Amino acid sequence: MAIVLEASGLTKRYGSTWAVRDLCISIPAGRVVALVGPNGAGKTTLLHLAVGLLTPDAGDPLVFGWSPRHNPTLVLARVGFLAQDRPLYKGFTVAETLRMGRESNPKWDQALAEARMGRLEIPLNRRVGKLSGGQQAQVALALALGKHPELLLLDEPVANLDPLARRHFLAELMESVATEGLTVVLSSHLVADLERLADHLVILAGGRLQVAGDLEPLLEDHRWLVGPTEEIGRVGGTVVQAGTGERQCRMLVRTPAAPRGWTAEPATLEDLVLAYLGNPDVCALPQPEAVPA
Amino acid sequence: MTALSGATWLAWRNNRQTAVIGGLLAAAAAAALVVVAILETAQSTGLVHTLSTAFQPLLIGVPAVAGVFMGAPLLSVDFERGTHRLAWTQGMTRRKWAAANLSLLMALSALAAAVMSIGAQIWIAHLPNIFDSTWGMFDLQAPVLFSYVLFAAALGAATGAALRRTVPAMAATLGIFIAVRVAFVELARPHLLPMITRVVVRGTGNNSVVPQGAGYLDATFLDSRLNPLPQGSLIGANTPIRLVYQPPSHFWPMQGIEAGIFVVLALVLVAAALRFAIRDA
Image 1 (tube, rainbow over the protein chains, first blue to last red):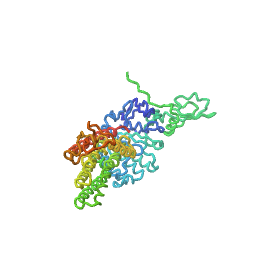
Image 2 (cartoon, each protein chain N blue to C red; image 1 turned 90 degrees about the vertical axis):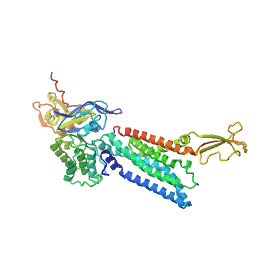
Image 3 (spheres, rainbow over the protein chains, first blue to last red; image 1 turned 60 degrees about the vertical axis):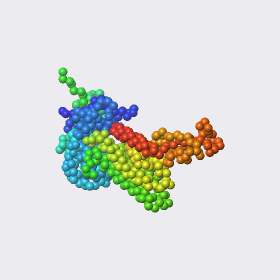
Image 4 (cartoon, rainbow over the protein chains, first blue to last red; image 1 turned 45 degrees about the vertical axis):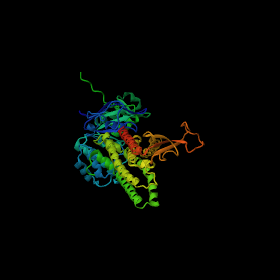
């Protein structure tokens, strides 16, 4: 399985604050990764490190095997990035924004970008600042996708968009994922949006990795268990979150099977995310693979 | 400007408004200077002299304007709006982005400064004798005026890249520029070439011992041992005088030296701006 982005011991400090601390991460190709965590967990720092906007204090990340800081052009040619708040030159027309993409990217697909604008009925001669927030987001996405990236990094791409614009943006994104087969890392607070999109989950807490893995096995492993409080000792696995009543308790547990006498319910992505965010000390990380002798 | 490409196109697109306004102002100022120069020769009236007098503080302010309004916003606007993250994550390196912006700024400032300096020189050449158009207008001569514009523009770009906020960068540019200028004019300029010292006795020999057009003239009465006389001493016809001054022959060499110093400083500041601009953000 090809690894698109990997890092070990990745560390970035601002003064005495650890933005990212001793992070080991590997993102497999072809995944749509939901990058989740509370504010200040290090999501933006991780994305900035991956695209070479920041220099790590330790543990250079590798994107397609290259260091974004030492080989910026090699990495940038294959990585699309959409920064937080979707920065664009507001005084440029849409056509000029696409020209910026053409002038500064060696592999630029003008026809693709223009076709996308046409399909979304965004006039090329309109100033970006005069477009709606949703349209600006689409222009920013088109700019990031115009270079046919193999990896697309999106930092809170749908924040502050109305629900309709959010849906259109994500639909556009999913279509590109389907046609181009690219890897996406998407940070968001809106877990509900990620549910339909993501097939891989990364949760950061306090600059460290808390959960990482493909979503399907994670969801299969986790379940809500409801049973008598006195039998709580019979529950194996890792308890992520527990709500204990006098007689009954309900717990989100990472365990392959429910004990006898307990009811099991499937967990959703949102359950998982909220439970882990609420309990930052519990981890669900891939175990190191056994090294063949 | 379809011929431009890559980072240069982006830099031009981002600064073309400033460039056009700056260019028009420089052209208008140069035209006004030439018109007043023509008027000074054709009909040298009080009104024309008033205009000539008004030009002097305006011209002295020109480099500061270039630094504050062209130099300081050049890179700081990008940092302030977060668009540097857009530019830096396309296919070009930060260095290329910064270099394109700085080259454009310096090329445009040089062009505007050249146009203005030529205008100023034409105007100075046509001023009547009532103006001290050499040492009294040292700052307005083409070489020095030109170099100050380049220096101020580079200073603005460097503070903008270092502070990454436009308004503080503008204020810092103005403050540093004025401080450097005042310090240089007061402390360094008179001594760019060694002064000439002469001791003469009034009333003897010819009266024009000080050459016409000398600058920084300083006269001290001396006693018979050639020591300075204390204040309030009696001055006779034969009291020796020590004259210290810059002869007119030093004028253009000193212009050249000062212009050279500020052009070199401008280049140093451009290099500093490049370094500041590519730091992580």
